[in-house]
Amino acid sequence: MAAVPTAMRAVIFHGPGDVRLEEVPVPAPGPGQVLVRIGAALTCGTDFKAYRRGHRVLLGDPPSPFGHEMAGTVVACGPGKARFAPGARVVVGNSAPCAGCYFCARGQNFLCERLKLHNGAYAEFNLVPANIAEHNLHALPDGLPFETAALSEPLACALHGVEAARVAAGETVAVVGAGIMARLLLAALKARGARVIVAGRGRPALEAALAAGADAVVGSSDGDPVAAVRAFASGRGADAVFEAVGQPQTWEAAVAMTRPGGRVCLFGGCAAGTKVPLDAHRIHYEGLTLFGVFHHTPAFFKAALALLGEGKVRPHGLIEGSIPLADVPRYFAENRDRPLPKTVVRP
Image (cartoon, rainbow, N blue to C red):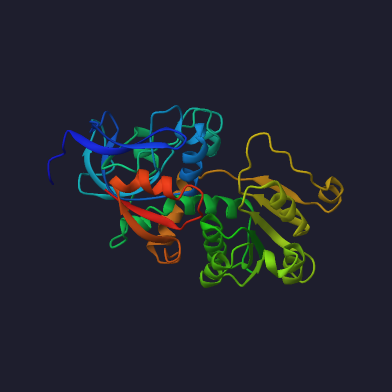
């Protein structure tokens, strides 16, 4: 393999609306750490949200490395037992169990008391922390492109939600929202054998959902989406509903679409302090289950990579176009308020 340089280009987040391409030292891997040469990274709606308003959970205190969906090639390993040798093609998870807190001991590392989300995808190299190198660094199936493998992170989040909702084959499910995460939820639901209706606003996004396998779609111009979902579900309401927007009104709509005894996965995150009025009488007497889902675990990440490697989830419609690393600051500035498919960043 080619020698590792001493300096690299990396995009650094300095604050809302301020990301810069900088030259920084290439880090040397310490015990248990792995240095990966980035083959492809993907832009993400969460990164755009962080760009607009900051994101302490994702990025910590600035200046911070930026980007979190990535795959590449191992170029160096730190001292200690290594799971991968230089030359291995891998996809990098952006978290892993800390192996010491109450939640990680129970398989809930998305609630880890010391959760530190890993970033730095928009760079030429990425230093993978030891706990991620041990638990959430995965070898790519032969022939799987880096950019497709990088979808493992958001797909793992969708799989987490679908598993938490206990979706079974043949169930009728509604997804509220038609963006990229909604389509990844759709992919995860179809892999389970569910019958799915997608409720959204823009017709192009709804057409993309149909192309991705939705059994039906309903737009805001088609009438009441709650009534449409209930009609699709034999008048009772859906067995499970996934809210993938993160707005109080769509949380309310998701609950209204659910049948008695059904489940509501509140997948889209609202801003801190948001209050949502809900019909407590209906929740109690109709036995509804409401729950939130955030992030993923190494097990869901591994399952997501397997679905991508087997071709059961395809990147078509989820990824469009590519940009070089140097264009990342401009790309975020020009598209900060536009809903876009994922774009490949190629260092």
